[in-house]
Amino acid sequence: MEQIPVYPDVLELDKAELHLHLDGSLRLETMLEIAEIENIEIPGNNTLALKKQCVYENEENFTLTKFLNYFYFTLKFLQTKYALTRTAYELLEDLSHENVKLAEIRFAPQLHRINGLTLGEVVDAVLEGINKGMNDFDIKSGLILCILRGLKLKLAHEVVDIADEYRDRGVIGVDLAGDESKFPLEMYRHPLLIAGQKGLNITIHAGETGPVEEIKTAVFDLNAKRIGHGIAIVKDPPLIQVLAEKKVTLEICPTSNIQTCVAKSYAHHPVNLIYQKGGLVTINSDNRLISDTNISKELSKMIYFFHWTIDDIKKVIQNAFDASFIK
Ligand code: ADE
Ligand code: ZN
Image (cartoon, protein in one colour):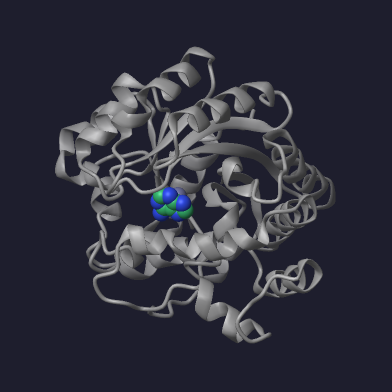
């Protein structure tokens, strides 16, 4: 990936990040230590060898399906309370170092039960890390629980139930994540409708690899207040305005889209067009480790490739503060 400068002005600004997956945002050094403590076999015994397993490397014709395979590896390191608490805490620490003042962290709790943790134990462990992090660093945070495309409907309903149970204890909403190219949103209509009936905040990965119709279903049928990625909206300019009027915000993750080959390059990424047409754009990192990025790098790329001014940067940051599910 092209190395783009991080602008000091961007680094200094107070920022909000709405779209960040815990399981894609670990520290390599921590993974090594967890491997040692928990006897997890890893290739080599150094961060360089580890990096090869879980940091995207330039590859032509890559896809979202291939990209999501990285998580099979990182998830091995997130199967104990210790690991979940530690990594959530460290993520807030890392974010605070780049002046992120508000961070919504998301993950799919069902994927952390290999060692027999209950869903409640998994969520409690992550919340413990988040609460400690909020205590120690100047940052507010909340947890979004992901329903995962490809998992059984019963598990999706369990996520909605546990999100409801924890709604006053740090869980701020639900998401639908995973492979949009294989599992359309329609399959998860029922649990998401129930989430809406329960009054949970909903964001949905839609229009990432899929068509604009997925975005329409998410917003008009399922009442999603935010859309993860949503870049397919560029094919339907009037919809950009309709969503902006409804205050539906787009969580755009530029580098992630280039790595999954849904955008050809930064210069070709639709984010600028969507922003210029009045879309409520926010800029996010999606996965700090896997995509080797962070929000300061992502925002800096908007300046570098699209000549955004610092006022443009402030605008999209404000969009993120305004659209946060954290009260
Ligand atoms: N989980 C982590 N990254 C993701 C992405 N880009 N799309 C869907 N699910 C994800
Ligand atoms: Zn995502």
